[in-house]
Image (cartoon, rainbow, N blue to C red; front, side, top):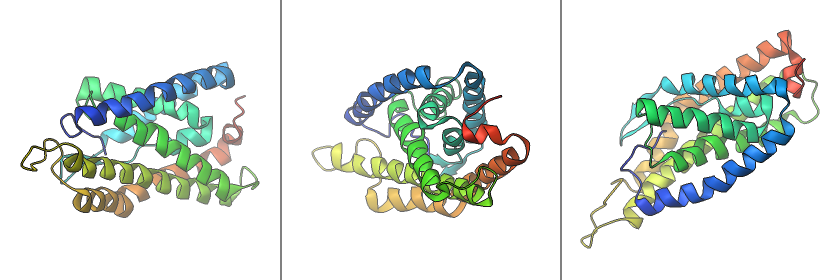
Length: 226
């Protein structure tokens, strides 16, 4: 669901940078206070994991791609603010070194995948798991459901951002200057593919990792690093 250069107008790109700059600053401040020294390597591993899993993407008609992200898993293990930093790092590296996602769209991509997705998924996980034991099957289910919901919220936002461009940026004759597809096309295409395919991949990967950690290192699921 990476947004390439040229698909969002300058005003839209600037808006999302303006939104994300204070979020990045707040995330850095919170992570600096709450993340222990032993958890910092885990945040780096989370960024690397997200980078790798996002590289396995499939083109979607209209110029974007479909893929898993791993953002909810990072949020479950380290908290949503740490996920903001980790996923942003992965997105920046992809944009600058691999051209996967536009440089002008880093703000928008970060809003969708590094902010909205981890927070939506994290609080969905908390809501479903409640006070269940760390090694319970309920937490495995909660992790999968949260990952599925978080990814599809990010896909929905991407579709909306695409679909609004013909309304926001067009010539005097009404011709779209950037993304040419309206909401009636962009939203169903983006959301449909992630609901049918990539959301299940995200859910499966997240559930399996949580299940593995329950058996081998449940302390990670409680935010405690030995």
